[in-house]
Amino acid sequence: MKKDLSLFFVLILIINVVFLQPALADEFIVDSPTPTPYENVFIDLHSSFSQTKRKTDMNTPALESYVGVYPEYSIQLVVPASLAKPKKKPAEYGYGDVRLGIKHRFIQETKWRPQAAFYPKFTFPSGDPERGIGNRTWTGTIPFWMQKNWDALKVTTGGGYGLNPARDKFNFLFGGILLQYQFTKSLMLGNEIVVQEPRSVTDGSEVIYNFGGSYNFTPNSYVLFSTGHTIHGQRRLIAFLGFGVNWGPLKPPCPQP
Image (cartoon, rainbow, N blue to C red; front, side):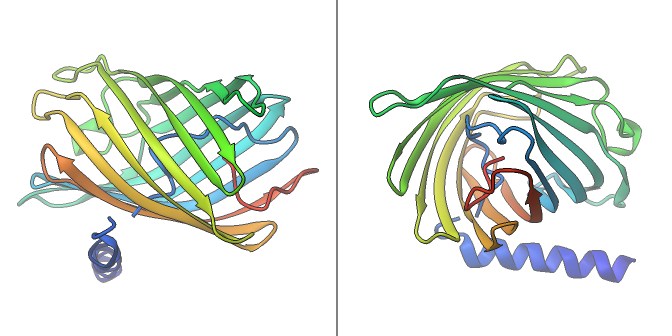
């Protein structure tokens, strides 16, 4: 087990080093306002990574699903297994906090008008905070996102307010901008910059740069990847790698969770 975890850490670190100069992310922090099409389902199995000087956190594996429950409405559910490794302390691994999101697109895109969506997400304390793999209470983000498409180019921006009533944690503002380009029917790449206020007594404000994308092997199967780092604030490395499938009446050329 320890050998397998060590190999996984090495793989993630290699991904970060290779892509650090643009940096890597397609679980982009900036969310698309496009809901999952009605009656369509996207499911992916992924691993995410975050490392600072004080701690390494991972969700590995995490099961994520997006379901189009009604026209212009979709839901997101993430069920993770989490690993926490504080500096100079043993690693803890177990069931993590479950996340639920509900997306509603209330403005459709036209030739001159961007589309817009309200996309609140809530995380529930199903992990074990005593072992460092869970928050002591619920958390949430309340954002609005806008997006405009020009052929293969897509620009997304927005922001919102984060909620965390746990001890020594702060509510915070955040926002960002994401540029994506569809190079082929299968390959999309993008870059984003995200700004956020301090989230706890040990954190400062951060500016994060991400690079990532997606690649469709078939119309119904795809890979998502990303890596990134802070360009302001405490040094943080992040990475994401996931494999997914989708099914339903509509099959977009690239995943739009």
